[in-house]
Image (cartoon, rainbow, N blue to C red; front, side):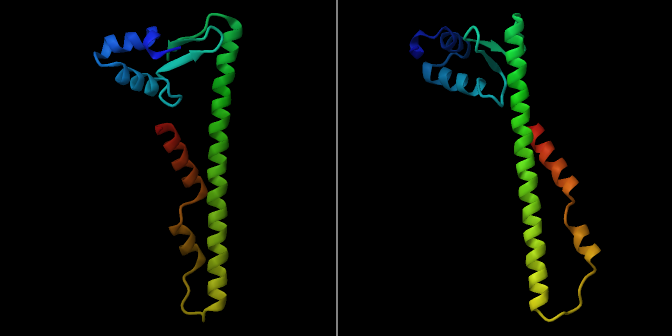
Length: 135
């Protein structure tokens, strides 16, 4: 469909009082999955506002299934970030262990003091979760 023929873009142009380019840019940001301003109904192939719920039971299941898939994808990304943090911490510990073996031993801090300066895995997970909620 050509942008000039779109009823939705015409409505956006009329509402914001700009041109077709600005309307297209506004539409692009509103349909972004993360903004959740507009939702596309795949069954009827139309755009709806974010509060829209399908009346058809099959379409409702499809919408819930997509939301569930999105949540699973976000959880997978969180686990990937957690595992990357774990691997990074393991590498640091291994490097520190290798460095301490090769260097002459000076006064060493107790290991409890070293670990307390590093954020715990639970703290890192909470930070990732709050960042995800904020975005």
